[in-house]
Image (cartoon, rainbow, N blue to C red; front, side, top):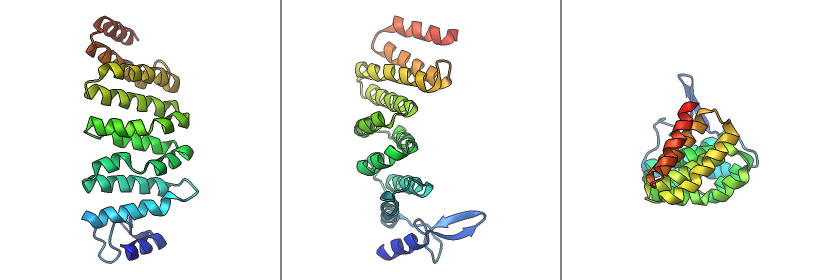
Length: 208
């Protein structure tokens, strides 16, 4: 693995075929076959390690982050994929909020709500510091969804309210994303028995 990683670090893009470039991090430079199993996971980890500490945020750095997450999922390490390396993710997110959008996108696909909630909770400080209302609204919505799936709808209500407020700031009161946040808030209201409030909120949404 050390030799393969060293070659990939020296010359990542090994050949072009059909208009596409293929990476030494993912494929053998000799036979061009894709790495599988433990080797694929190890190479993905090395790929991320190679770019993780680079001072400049780049497409290479973001691609390495996506690559290692995908490899971990395929390799049966879904929880590790969901959480990744918190220090590395936070370091990227401080300079490139788009990384947080990517991370939240992965967490949206995590089937275990407890694992998703744990990972989301670990990102709360970073999300709070990023200053991007779109990311903060998405995070609040995912927190609410995980809590609701765990049967903790009353706790989820706090996050749906925050999601509505932030979506309104980020997208405007008439935007589809804001309507989605308000609809989810109404659904959670109904799930805790506050049906009259839920119906009123849905009526206001439909009136627009």
